[in-house]
Amino acid sequence: MKDKKDRPVKAPEPRVQYAALPFRAEPHPEVLLVSSRETKRWVIPKGWPMKGRKPHAAAAQEALEEAGILGKIEKKPVGSYHYVKNLPNGAAILCRVDVFPMRVARQRKTWAEREQRITRWFPLEKAAEAVREPELADLIRGFDAVHREEESSSSRPGTGQARSAVPA
Image (cartoon, rainbow, N blue to C red):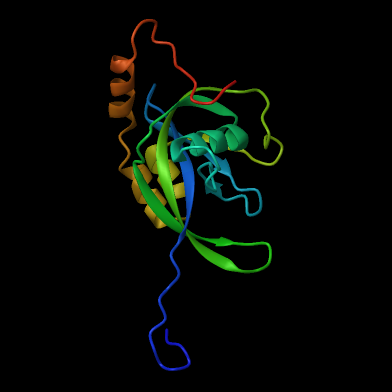
């Protein structure tokens, strides 16, 4: 694309969002997907950065608000994907979503967006097929939930009880 003086126009940098990739490894690796509010397509819990919160903590908060889940979220993203977000004013913006794995300990009976969304556990391949974003599908296909579950279990001292990354 070029401007009026025939100079190349630099594409705007993508806006950053943070997401949780909720998973469990037993009895077989699965991820939890949530329906989007507007289009009802399958997505992972995500949202904008939150002032005063680290990226992984913002992702954990989104998981609580959108899916009612609590668990241990990793501090390092497993990867990222891009998508185009359609805004209420009709504009569309490119977003880069940094994805933080979250080993789910439990799901609350009630949560902020329970009436607006559906949550469902999917085996990894079915989850990859259910999402619309190709980069997210690849990220899910390559996710090693079993390995992460084993690492989490072996590094947790004592009772094996899951610790919540988000206050109950």
